[in-house]
Image 1 (tube, rainbow, N blue to C red):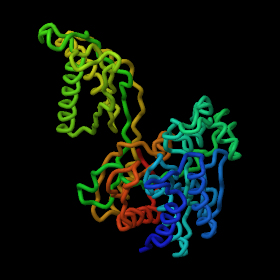
Image 2: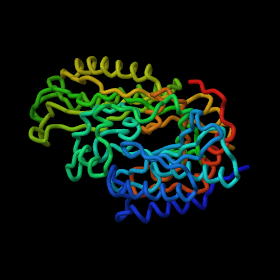
Image 3: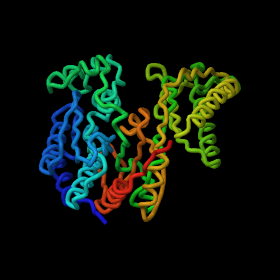
Image 4: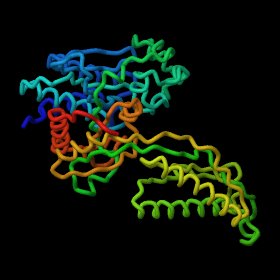
Length: 418
């Protein structure tokens, strides 16, 4: 059995922490000094291994172990190196380091793969800095709206184009929607990532295979309109209480979630924002208006569509009962991305404790799957969630997941099926 190069992985995690920790948390700002420091660390490690190095027009770093047939479609192992402000050391970086750890192990064992294996450090997956998701991966396939070049960085106001220019990257690649990578040349995309919730911790499991990445239907600008009134002077039958009606709607949607769960459907539901007008509300007032968000996520488009339709029906019915009007508005939608069935099955066979779960957060694998590239993800147990300084992935769990990744590279399915 070929084991991951954990000494290399440990040294890379340590180097990243030393270079990018700012106070309690990690600062690897997208297209900034922190992300660039991380790319430099990975590139230096890859060069020391003798890997082929390439950087595309928008800064994605490819580190390639040549295969027997250099013309054959290659296998990509990738993830991002940027972080949210005051994030943790493992989100994103674990996937790049797992790829280098796996490739290093193959080189040490003198294994020459059938095709090239490329470890890809993808730029700017986090939308925290520019409010644009998947800049590196979507940009690599010419998918970004050129208008994104004008979007300012949240902290200093510099546009994405200005940041590109300062780092000698090519904004024209985005402006002209130039495709920097051809999907036909990519056999598969593999991504290791820390789990960003508590499922594996509570299950007592070190790793899981990802079934798919949830899509989202979000009522971003929902409102309930009633009437302001004196809290002591208006009896219940005469009230048009926007807060009470909104709470009733949210309670109903919670029962929908429970029902869908009981039927075996994949669903998560959140009301991430709920507020009254601070210029109008008061402790002695019946609230006449609320603003809120309904966030519906699933790996099934059909489930999301069904639950969104139920939200609209319930809003009409509850509005009539409470003498208010709901305006849920349009949904902003993102499609779910299902992982490749054959790759999932192979990864499951390589885990001593096989377990599958959906990903509720977005990942670069979404873009590769949308491009028709067979894609797979493996999660690693991680305490305390992610996007905070307290991420706590254990190296023993990382080793188990990376070992499965190596097993997949050594026994890659001849074909992939969605």
